[in-house]
Structure formats: structure tokens, C-alpha cells
Picture 1: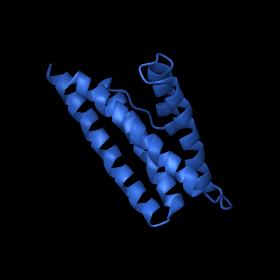
Picture 2: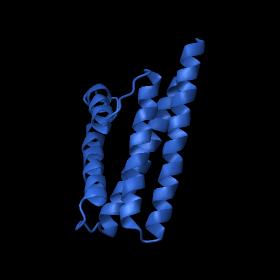
Picture 3: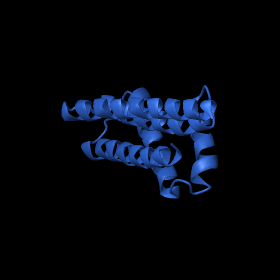
Length: 133
């Protein structure tokens, strides 16, 4: 029982990190730093996903492995809606373009979508964790 409680506490800690990172994304967006906002929005998604994985005591070193496991275990099984898997993939692509493509110019619309997806996923994961403790 104690191990389970610890896993839930750790998951909640990770979710709080996701929420704080989302706040940073919104602040950057409001200051018209779209590249920074895209980065922070994606990382808030990544941290939220890792909150779910904390319940299983699963973790991976590479982002693609974290997301692949989440997709296989939680999206394909429809614990979370399938459309969220597509949204997460889109967010990851935008973040990579923002971070690594020197000529990429993110739009306000695309950046707002990143933030909206992060918020939607965090809300879903919040409910998911509340159901578990």
C-alpha cells in the first residue's frame, strides 16, 4: 500500500510540474515569444504523460520512448481519446520545428493550439489521477 501511495504522490508531483510549465508557456505566449511558448507547451505535455507513467513506475530516457509507451498503453487502449494521440504528435512536431529549424516561424494560431492541447491533456490526466487516489 505504501508503494502505491508513493507512486500516486510522485505522479501528482509530475503533474504539478506540467502545470507550472504550462504557466510558463502562457506567459511566453503573452510576451509574443512563440518559439519559447511552443517549447514549454510541449514539455508540459511531456511531464503530464510522465505523471501517468509514474503510476506504473515506468520511465524512459528518450522522449520518443515515453510517448510511444503512452500511445501503446493509454491511447490505443482508449484510456485517453485517440484524437489526443494525434494532438500530442502534432505538438511534438511543432516543438521540434521551433527548437531545431532556424527558419521556422510559428504562428499565433499554431502556438495557441499547442497550449490548448497541453491544457486539455493536463485536465484529463488530473481526472485520471484523482480517480486513482
